[in-house]
Image (cartoon, rainbow, N blue to C red; front, side):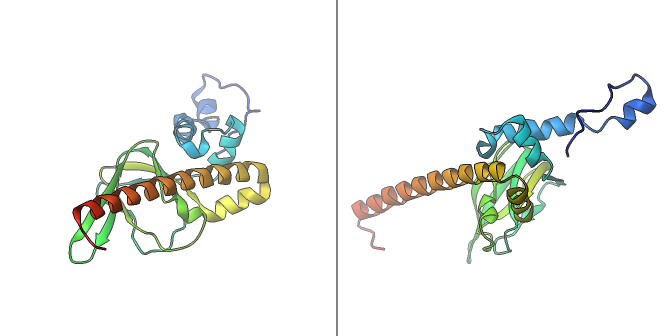
Length: 185
């Protein structure tokens, strides 16, 4: 949530202290969390505050599903506090854990680029505070503040590209290992 920097100084009065308690530790916690995320690493405080206006907050209980594999992707998530597991469902084998993510890590970012179905399921492994950035909000930011929105999209493209390169390298190494062992694909 945005804060008003032109507000009067806080008074020791409980009444005024409550009235002006708009900016709190949670707001600073969101900015601190965003600063940990590579997507926001090069953003100024002002640019981060533009994203802070768009952030949705939610607490998930242990074992609560954040999103399901196959459902439409609507946005990305950042772990402010907690642990999230990413699972892939394997027919006849149940689910395979692909990753365990912690504070400051993000997931679901491809949903900001397209609306294709989720490729995995995300589940809170413990009580977790999650902040979300959704596609319609990002589009609104792109219209309102195109420089900030494009800066974010370029960083997102860079990270997605880097992940794709890593995946290709891993696939090549796996293919070479399979070739050495005589496994035919």
